Image (cartoon, rainbow, N blue to C red; front, side, top):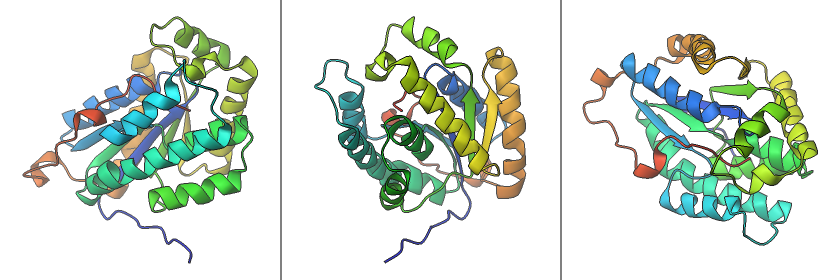
Length: 242
């Protein structure tokens, strides 16, 4: 039986994507601060992760000392974490009308496990529909910059993970995947140059989000007398897989 998409009635789902070191996690935090300053109720989360169970999966996926992970195993673990994340965090928040900001989501799976790992894109899309109840972001921001620049940022950081050690060729495939997805879905996906200073990038992000606020009209704080309190695991991610 075909899974029918279930659109949330009032909430707004924004995802932030890009290669390693593109600054999307910083921009997710700044966007959350901006939206709250405007009175909106936000839930900020990340993938893989967002719930206690999904965070455990995240640890396995990012562990540099773990045994080699087959591409299919990597994908199945990601979908398992995403399913839990959607059920426990994203769907309830959207149902209450909040703006959900997610540091990585399904487009990362297509870019990393599909374009870069070589798994079948149609298969990944089908598994993603099953894992997410066919939820699709209202807006996806792709933070783009040269791969060498992003990897230089990541490889100078103290919290390097398994993906930071992938080859330059792998990461170039990831970047090309994101840009190809943006070309195929121009209404939903917006490419933001991540080369500028973070404040300039944040202004570009605010401009991209502004039309969505007028169209979707998510709740503002005064409309929600008892907004759902996110778990500690839905705090802003410093770095996420894919």
